[in-house]
Length: 151
Image 1 (cartoon, rainbow, N blue to C red):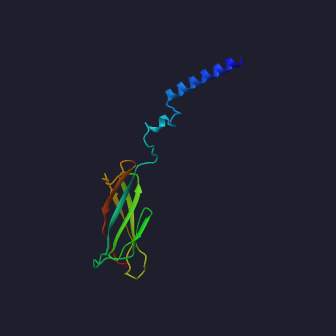
Image 2: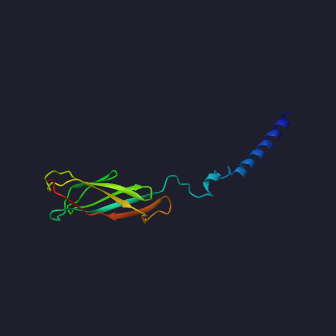
Image 3: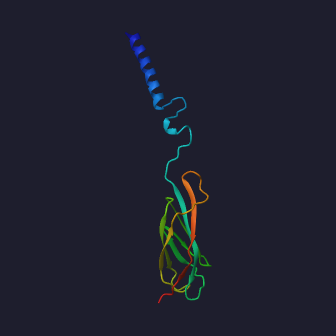
């Protein structure tokens, strides 16, 4: 009886190995059919960096305005002494619209200016410097802004 049980288990194990190999499971190298032929498995979603840069000036006399707060979807920077700024967002690589806000937050230090909001549109963006995998690269636009004096 014991010999019959042993023979049955050996045959059952053989049958299971054959079925697993047909389904794509291999215990030899720890691989499965999910490995895509031995290549690296990568999880996530495609992404790209959208960059907006430019200069903020006074509408009245065309002078650069430092310390203006520029915000684009969570990225916030201050303009430098020459009024230059750069904000960026990494998101899905498709057409995108970003609301950008320019706000004078330093009071009367550099004059007082009205807050301005504008939308930058990326339509059919071309990306460069991608990784060839999930990261598509980056694209940029320049947006120069002239702020009005507070009345």
